[in-house]
Amino acid sequence: MNIFRRSARAHRSRLPQQELQVAWQAVSLLLDYPGEDAAPQRALLRPAVTQLPASVRDPLVAFLDHADATDPQVLRSDYVETFDHTRRGCLYLTYFAYGDTRRRGVVLVQFKQAYRKGGAEFESDELPDHLGVVLEFGATVDIETSWKLLGDYRAGVEMLRLALQDRHSPWANVLIALCATLPPLGDDEVEAVARLIEQGPPQEDVGMEGYALDPRLNSPSPGTFTPPPTIPNTPEFLGNEIPVGAPR
Image (cartoon, rainbow, N blue to C red; front, side):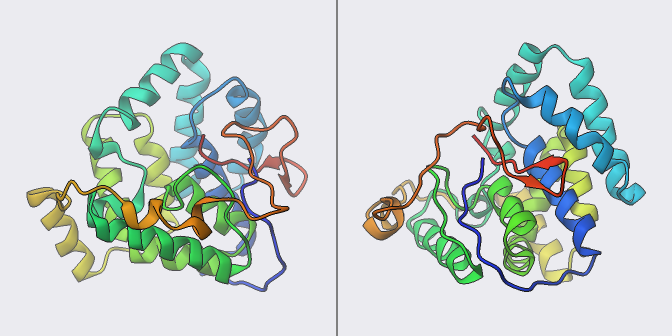
């Protein structure tokens, strides 16, 4: 799903640009719900993944092997059990920092503003802090914007990796691959992860009214395209092989 209107802008990364784009594209796709198009997409993804550095390639190939060997219905059930039935498997980056608090609603607005500043309008029913959304933006629009967002919420990424590894989830390999593209945790991030493990995210069940009540950020502008929450039949491609993915 292409949920961004692209605009040209120069960007750079600490990894070779194409490798980082392919890696983030792969992780974005593999963190999506494995629907009917998942197997053909994995077949397209595999040749590009095998060209990545070993630290990224090996865990991604391990997940691809698992997914290809697993009955599709079982894989879908496992996905729902992993990401929809437990908060420890939350794919929304700001949840680990703000829980379900009003402050999180404000931060979601800032994510949309970051995408706009990075060169695209975010047009999806998905929340903008979904890890797959952040990675797709970096792979297809602006690496620097996504690099900063991932850096700002690096502790949340690490918490998700630890949670998936703790439950021996096959998707842990996808997070291991992602973390291999990111800098090591800093001292403050290590402390943040330790606090999250001990205390969990903040708990203030007031919802996210600040986000939901902002009409500029939740209603499509006239003339804009809001895609359906499924993978399209004619995805945009990175190069000649890799389809742009996005969360459901």
